[in-house]
Image 1 (cartoon, rainbow, N blue to C red):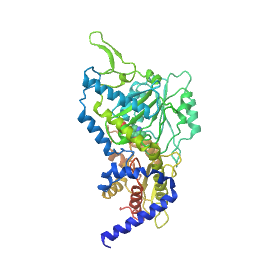
Image 2 (image 1 turned 30 degrees about the vertical axis):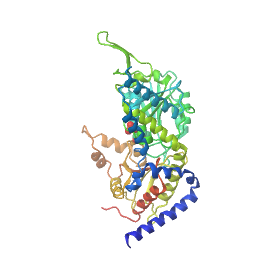
Image 3 (image 1 turned 45 degrees about the horizontal axis):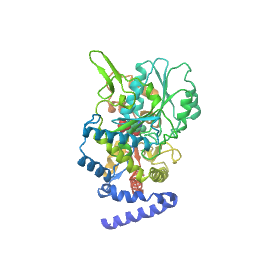
Image 4 (image 1 turned 90 degrees about the vertical axis):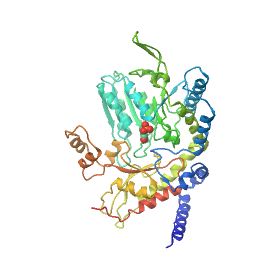
Length: 482
Ligand SMILES: Cc1ncc(COP(=O)(O)O)c(C=O)c1O
């Protein structure tokens, strides 16, 4: 068939499927502004034929965000903040305005919360880990599906003799058994000085959204709560007027694509006062003396911002937040929900000729309490898995950007891929100092050590979801090569 005719058929099939989709998800029609937005602000996606499905990896910026930011940089003379000279004072004002905007965006009262700018969410988490006043008898409790930048806090706990406990997840939905969690929260001894409880508002592995009600439940039992919002806030409203976690790490590039290199820790003032910084740096002190061997830290966010901030990027944070606000987080949320519902349904229904599923989806297969992150593996008709790296390579040939591996979320991976504690013990018992990913793969023989993840965001449309389903369909009745 000539190429033009083939393209005509493909477009017709897409239109027909879109009409069916609208019947299934009528509220999608109310998110039409995003189609206009995509045509205006994200032109590069369709001009270059990209199917971008990695919003949980990184959001995409609108062209106007760049224009506003470069125009500001071009027209202003901005110096290193925190001095009285005019260019420094101008930059200080812009930095403080960005800080204020972050509070407003999350509906956080400045009397209750501070914004500490960091390089990313991991930087925010490290600030907590290194400064949390862990001491023997304290507890660090976290769900199985945390990102490694949360898991890493256990090393600070371990160094101070503090036990780490993981809250298990229950298959197939990969949610926490709430009764079990409440029992674990109840176990914080009354005489224990500190308990730190961490969980993701949305798992970057499975898309599961854990209840925000846990924040208050944990606090009532004496825990300080880290709500990892990094994968949640690009497509969901986090209202800190309603929910009061002690610490909230965020990366701005995940929310609106640009700038990279800036995140923040939103911290409750009273929780922040508990932290004991292990060092001081330029910008964090009121007074430090060489001869007197003393230093005095600032009493709020300034004590946690080491050295010079990525200051020229801070106005771009404000621009990005304005952009999200102008599109409307609720509109983005609804569009992502509709696309996720449709995708889950279509992927779940994909079958080989012998009736076996083409895919195993990890996590919930409906959109109740889950976000727009869908993780899966592909299987052949004999239920042999396709290496996720092969899937990624083939998707790349179709200009589909998706992500494979375990997404820095080993707990989610180990549980869903069926990698047992005893298998891991065997691998980790080997004498070598370093273990490469390939060594690890050899060790976990016969099981997948990763998965394929697609995720929706601010500029997603039906064609993106449709293209992925088309791609996934090419695995029907395909055999894994020996
Ligand atoms: C849930 C979650 N937490 C933390 C992070 C770490 O973010 P960053 O790499 O920007 O520090 C990520 C990144 O993917 C994430 O998804």
